[in-house]
Image (cartoon, rainbow, N blue to C red; front, top):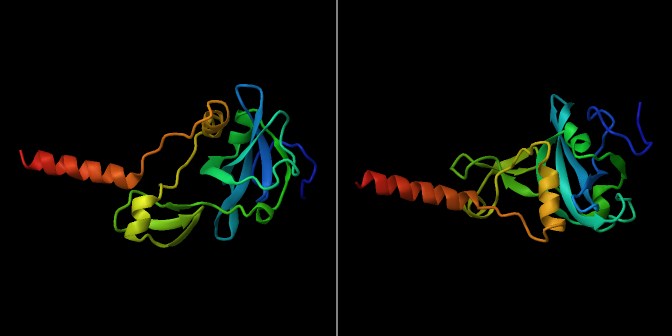
Length: 184
C-alpha cells in the first residue's frame, strides 16, 4: 500500500520516499522545511526507522508546498529517526523529486579524518577519503530528535550559520597537545 494523501505523520519509513518534505515549525511562528534525502538499506531492505534528513534553504509564513520550495538548496543533513518529524510538530506535506532542485546528499567523512576514513554520500561509502577531503569535509552526523529545529532556528530566526569546526582542525589540535605533553 502506498500513501499519497498529505499531510501525514509517518510511524515508519514504509510509506516514505526520497523527495518528500515536511514542515519544521520555528520559534517565531514561521516554518522551515525538511526533505527526505535517502534511506539506509541492508540486504535490500529499507531501515524502518532511520533516514537521511535534510534542511533546505527555505522559510515561509505557512507550511511548505512543492511550488514554494522550488529551487531551494540543501543547507545541512543528518541521519535522523522517523520520530524527528512528529517530535518537532511537523508532518509530511508532499513530494517533490530531488532532481528537480538538484538536491543530492552532501559529501562527508565516515569518522575522524584518519587514514581509514571513508568519503560518504549519505549512507553510501564511496571510497577512502583523500588527504584533501579529510582536511575540508565534516563527519557524517546522526541528529537527535530536536536537532533539525535547532539548526533551522539558528539559520532562519537568529539569521546566522551554526558554528562548526572542521574535524581535521580538531585532530591537529589533539596531536599538538599530545606532542606537548610528551615533551614535558
